[in-house]
Structure formats: C-alpha cells, structure tokens
Image (cartoon, rainbow, N blue to C red; front, side, top):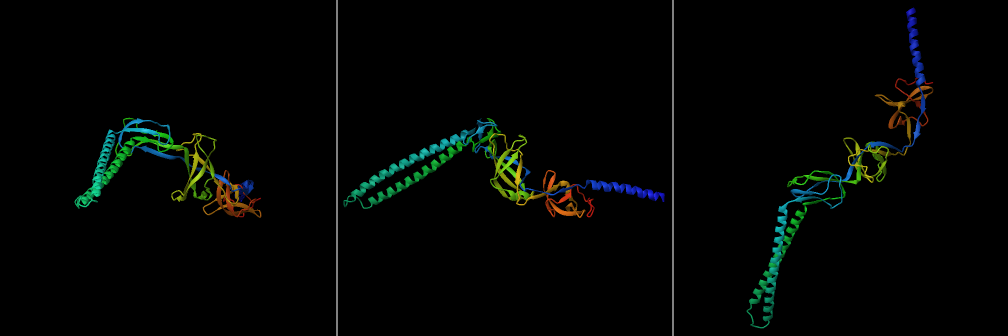
Length: 361
C-alpha cells in the first residue's frame, strides 16, 4: 500500500511540471498581413554580350600578333598577320590571266572593226549593179557575225578572269586577321612562327565585348508569372560588396527547362565602370508581386507532418489545428494560405504534441 501511494505521488510530480511547462510556452501571436510586392534572391551568371574565338580562314605562318590579352580593339582593327607566299603567287597568276584575257578581248574588238569596215564598203558598192558578186556581201556579213561572237566570248573570259583575280585577292586578304566587333582581347593562343594548319579550327585569339554584358537568370517556375520585359532589376557581385548594379530584362526564353523547371531570362547590364566581368556569378534581387496581400506568421508556428501542414489557433480556449499551405519565407516569418484570418492569433512555437482540444490558457 505504501509503495503504490509513493508511485502515484511520483507520477503526479512528473505530469504537473510538464503541464505547467506546456502552458508557459504557448505564446500566441497574431497573423500579420503584409504587401505582396517583394524580392527573392536568385543566382545568375554574367556573359559577354558578344564573343568569338578568332580563327584564320587560310593556312600560313603567324608573322605578327599586334594585340595581347587585355587589349581594347575596334571593329576592323588588324590583329594578326599571317605569311603564305603561295597565295601571293596565285594572285599574281590570276592577275596575269586577267590581263591576257583583256588583250584578247581588245584584239577581237579590233578584228570586228576591220570586218565591219569591209562589210560597210561592200554594202555601199552593192548599190551599183554588177560591182560585186552576189554572194560576196553575204559572206562578209557572216564573217562579221563570227567576229562579234568572238568578242562576246572574249568578254566572258575577261569577266571570269576578273572574278578569279578578285577571289585570289580576297583569299590573300585573309592573311590579315581583323576584329569582327569592338571589344577586349581576353585570351591569346599563338605567337610569331606558329603554323596555322589548313582546314584546322585553331583559335588565334579570344575576343569578348564586355562593355555590355548578358546577365542570365534561371527563374523558377513559381516566379515566371512576374517577368516584365523592360523592367530594371538590381544585382550584386562578390567582388564589390555593398554595391548595387542594375540591369534591364531584355530576352525571355518563354519555355521551361524540363530538368530544373526554370525559365532562362536575359538582362542587359552595362559595364560602365569596368568592374563587371564575364564568368561572374551575381545574386539578383528578383521582383515578385501579387494582387493579393500575404498573410505571414512566425516560421515556428507552422507544423509539417507526413499527413498535413497546419498552424494551431485557439477556439473556445482549446487548441484547434488549421490546415494551411506554406508560401515564401521572409526572414523568420513565412507566408501561409488557408483558414487563418488577418489578426487571428496562433501558437508561436507549435508542434504536433499540442493535440487538438488541448486547453490553451
């Protein structure tokens, strides 16, 4: 009998502190309504707006490299000079063939003039009966037509020779490698004496336009409805802590990547002070807005189990579980949607140990 009383007293002593501890920690806080306009932090990547691996279109030895890594260049500026004597020989041969074709054209035109003169005299003499034989004028006319055909042929040969000469000159001009756009040389791969092989894709230099950059942001599916073309977005880089940069939304993929459920959005960022560089990974303050205000509670107020997500409110002085859906987080608060009204109080530090119907003081 004495042992049973001792056991009951011990159990009562354990339950009483637990009950008092539970009551002491059931702090109630109101659900707050806040504006839906906000920003979320998204990762991004900076790329050159234009970039190209500069290659030679013909084979040859590198004779001169006129720029180096870090050089600023303008469109059309000479970058590399190659040497290929065989191309100069081909140009000289094409020029000689062109001049020869021109000479043959001139000779054929002179022949036409001579035949035309003879034909004109015979035609004048034929006006006098019996002055010339009847078929003599016809034969001379045929000679004139044949001479004119030769002239047309020679002219075609001149045009063909001229095109071959232009092609040879254009090929020889490829020995002088120029910049396709304004930018900065970010890599150099060759030096004088390097042999550029025929038909091989060998990069000589890397050129990037970094005065204007592409800021690529993978926007999660949740936020794609908030993309506004032309809107300005702030971003930051690790190399310049505390400094804000701005870029404008310019190109939208309009399709989700099936692997990660994001949509690629490109923004134009102008690198006015030169502190931005291709390859950087900025963080973007992506704007998100909604027509309806958000209802937020402390993150500790939301309980998630394998079966449901809920908050605990007080109904007639007793715990009442209210199912909710979690939204975006705002520091130590989280947005919720469900049966909770603005201003309604919920348990600040909730858990599934606070069962439905538990008295709440």
